Amino acid sequence: MDNEKFQELVLQQLQVLTENQKKLTEGQQQLTEKVGSLTEGQNLLTEKVGSLTEGQKKLEERLTKLENVVIRIENDHGRKLAALLDGYHHNAEVLDDHTERLTRIESKIAAHDIQISILDKTKSNKRRAK
Image (cartoon, rainbow, N blue to C red; front, side):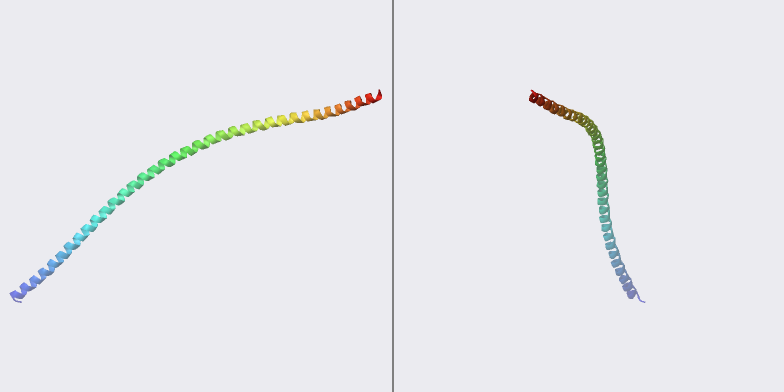
């Protein structure tokens, strides 16, 4: 192989190496851009996870407050229902007492009606007899 052919071969190889180096550099730049893009995406995801965590904490706080309100309402209603039932039982006892009294009064009135009727008949008989 003579000198010229060797130089041509070396130049061709250098050209191939240069082209390959350019391709590698371009590929490296593309990878760098994609890694940058992935890093940005990861940062966005980290921010969103942080905001989701904050939202979850707020929801848990609200849920705790709501549970406390429900417990308070249940306790208040329990006391009010107990008071209502006590009032109902008291009213039922009073009504039972009044019903008993009314029954006694009605039976006395019935007896008095009979006595009045007898007295009226006796009185009319005495008038006829005179």
